[in-house]
Length: 375
Image (spheres, rainbow, N blue to C red):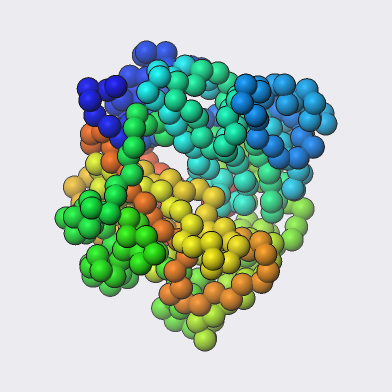
């Protein structure tokens, strides 16, 4: 146990994990405020389908029986193909530490689904206590062909040494103390409005479809094209070759087509104080089978700054409908934010020192691979 403190590990404790050989084959430059970025190796396979290992079953055992061929990263990954890529990093965790992963923001915004899998653990995006071994990433391009390169960072991992989520008894106090949610006029939204009715542990976020005027772009929809996105090319592609803009509807309603991919954003401006991290989670599965995000992790300092000088940032939504066409209305609840305690305040915060492509994001910001928004 780390000095009897329980929660999510901030940057300075992740750095200690490097020196204690709990994180192998990585670089301290990959450390974020409360996570590290994981990088792609040259070893990868085209799989017959998605899978989870059984207890005591290794990923390499599954590769022997379920892979179709070994891939060459010189060739792009095909849409809807299931690929398994070994990550450069390996873990040698002490018995009390465990971890969770999520896609990086830039990856979610190109509709690239990533899920971590590890030996003997039947759960995506999770690493059990005391895990020692390789890390593998299941990758499924959904909208575009994807060109991977050795060293590309698609996912990030967070480490814990115990329960970190803030419960109902704490969240109201934290919400009011740090003023977690603001509207577009920078007015604080009180906790009785901001906390979810179906789960008072979380903050509810709603979708912005109204816009400020009749011609405002409030989102994007993927184009059905066989275009390649090379993840080594930043600020490179013309957005209008990959996405079409969505203009604010006059009646505040949109029909989202089944199996299409959309970029939207929240009405609310959220901020993550430096003592916490946050995760975007589904609002309510009974509202329909859709996914509101691929990249669910928000670092300490997002929309907050060093000392609370920022009054929040809108969260970008990566939405895909699965069961049927869905009607979305302006202001409809679409996701929730859960908060986690860090064991202590992180030594640096989101957007400061290391920079970020999305530190000043407002509206439906596209991925960093595109050099312009859709006209």
